[in-house]
Image (cartoon, rainbow, N blue to C red; front, side, top):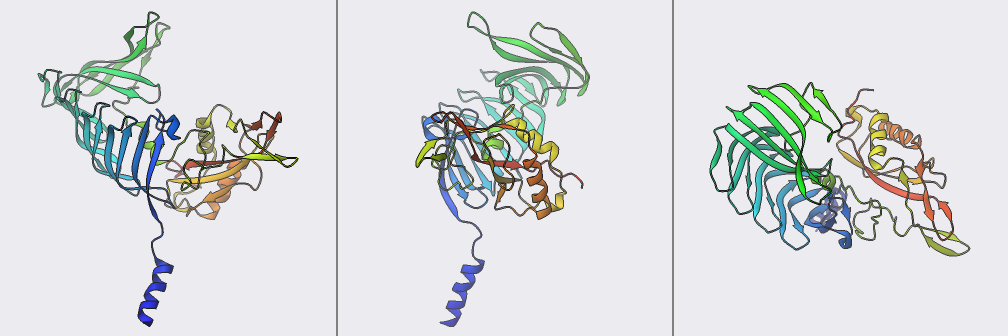
Amino acid sequence: MIRVLFTAILFLVFGPAYSQKISVTYYDSSWLLTTKKSAKYYRTGVIDTIKYQFHGEVRDYYMNAKLQMKGRYRANIKVDTFYFYYPTGQLKTKGRYLDNVRYGVWTNYYEHGKIRDKVVFNRDFIAVIEYYDKDGNPKMVNGTGEWETEYYNDLVKKVITIRGAYKDTLRDGKWNYYQHALTREGKHELRLECTEVYKEGKFVKGGYFFGGDGNRDLRSPVYNVLPEALKFENTENWMRTHTLSIESYPYLKFLPKLDTIAMQNAGEWYKVDQTPKFRGGISNFYSYVDREFKCSGADLGTDNVIYVEFVVDSTGFIRKGSVKFMESDMAQVCKDRLVSTLESCPKWTPGHVTELKKDVPVKVSLPVNLKLKFTKN
């Protein structure tokens, strides 16, 4: 009896450090976490409710319930084979992740089911080894031949088409990069954006064009061929639409009560109509933190992303003493430096209550990515 009781006490004290939850999360067209009403995709999977990491199989769906992607995570690290699908349900791409990066041969398919090409990755794009036209005729064999592909560029929000050639798996000759543009007549056309010339895999020269407004010579390649989809950075770091609140996901404790934050005035509560916004957008805020926050890798802890909470006061500045951290093993010296960085942050546009015609203080909660913060003291 005593042994059983002692075991139970040990479990309570030293038991699992996190709890797991089967979750359904919704995303907009940019793969930002949002409400079901605003969603273009949704995900099913298991997350822990302490570090908010994905574990085991996750499945992404189009809103018509057709599968968009499936794969496995180990504590937010992509592992093994991932599968991607067209909205029709047809397999689009399959390939392997090794410790969160693309590795080995990835196979792409046309929507009618035939193989389009086979591409080699080792973190980044390496080379194409096979390419077929829509009828299945080989255009590239053993890394030699012509290649054409297209992909959606998350940064410019446009489809990019690439046409080039390989010789013994090395780029050779002229490579052209096109953006899909809409003409005044409403027709889609390919607009040449960039040309690069290679010889035996080495860049020789190139030119970048500005839609008829001139061009500039290139000294090095500018296009990243088949970059990793932005969806992973957004979903793994819980990037969200700025109006999302904890009411939509009660188990995501880092979410603010932005949609229900109110101020009391003469005994009445008022909804904040306009949430705080950083000048130039949230990407400028992250650029500021990336530039100003300095701390050593040893003191940063093991978390790539931490969640911070602070109050933007009615004047637009981060209130002194309001910065808080959620479940981080970052050393105190780094926390102090991050607090100082945030409290010295340039002015935000403050929250506003239209009914009162008044700016008000609002609590903000955001993930901060520390992957690039390994700088020396």
